[in-house]
Every structure is written in structure tokens, then in C-alpha cells.
Length: 114
Length: 114
Image (cartoon, rainbow over all chains, first blue to last red; front, side):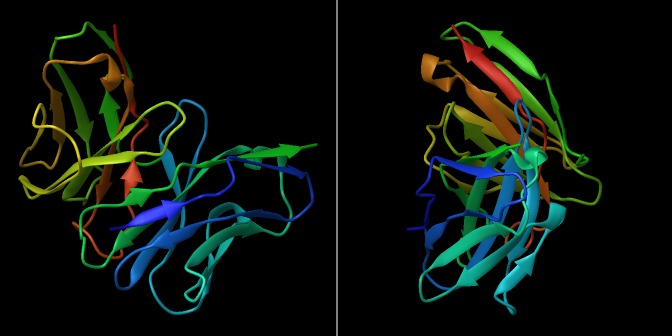
């Protein structure tokens, strides 16, 4: 069965510092991995995806994520945080064999202090 | 903003009633998925429609049903509403039923069951 774990409910970072939001996954076969962001009272916005190839994936708003197959992780990173990055972040996985279903983690609230 | 629109944005229903939520997919997308996001949780996959046929279903009872129309718009119907059905319902469209394509989400419908 597919699953996604986001071990931190909240991450607090000072503006200008690097940030990391952690994600680990479990899936049979090759995974398709995604990060989404959700602002208050809004739907989810796509940030980036890993399908195959380079383990470092670059996405929107300066975010990037590193795929690590041996650790089954897909951590979201940004070199320099902005206050406007404060939001709820979701990691998600789709198994190659399960065409329709995307499984989401429970979310991590990112808070950037000025 | 994505091209996915949902209506209504907010809805209050009484336990036992029935509700219909609507979603217009992004231009060029033929696949619609529905998710339920309870407060403080990640989205849970309800089902997906591809070319007007159900193409995968999550762990939801049969009183959750759906439709997809020839223009690829979709409806989610919930019968015999229960208090636990109170949630944000998200519609996502994509250009293919699975694989490496990301899904684009609407802003959601906030359903409150009293």
C-alpha cells in the first residue's frame, strides 16, 4: 500500500535562512512524487514533481526537492525563506501501478518569522 | 490560479440531506479527481473519472457517487449526509488519468453538515 509521512507538524524558520520540510514515502515500484502548497481557505497549488532522472528537482517560487531512493525520502528545500512562504505544505505520491490515486501526507505548517 | 473552478464555495446542509458539488476542469484536461480534506488533515482520495467512467476509488462508502460529463466537468454527490462529512471537498483535473502528470486543484467547496 502507498503511504506518505511528514514527520513534522510545524517547521519554524527565520526569514533569509534555509528551510527543509521532510517527507518519506512507501510505495511498490517506482514512485511519482509531488509537493503542493495550500494557503488559508484555498485549494492546493502544485510546486514540483519527481518522475525520473536528476534527483534534485526545481519547482515554483524557488523551491526544490531532493529525491533519495535509498532513504525513500523527498524533502522540500529552499535556500532562503521568505515570510510569504508561510503556508501548509503537502507531500504526495502516486504509484506507477495505481494510475488514478494520489496519496497525500498529513501536511507540515511552515512558519517564517521576519 | 488554475483553470479549475468549483461551486458552490460554501454550503451548509442538515444531517440526512443530499448534496451535489460541481467542478469544471481546466481546458484540455480529460480527467477529474475528487478529494475530501477534513480539518487538520491531508486530502483523501474519493474517486477519479476519466472519459466519463469511474477510474479508481478510495475508501469511501457508496453514498459518495459522481459523474463526468462530455465536456469533462464533474459532479460529486453525497447522500444521507453525516456530521463527519463536514470537510473541504477538492476537485483536481489532469490531462491523463495517471502516471507522471500533476493534478491541478480548484479552490474547494467547504461543506458543513449540522
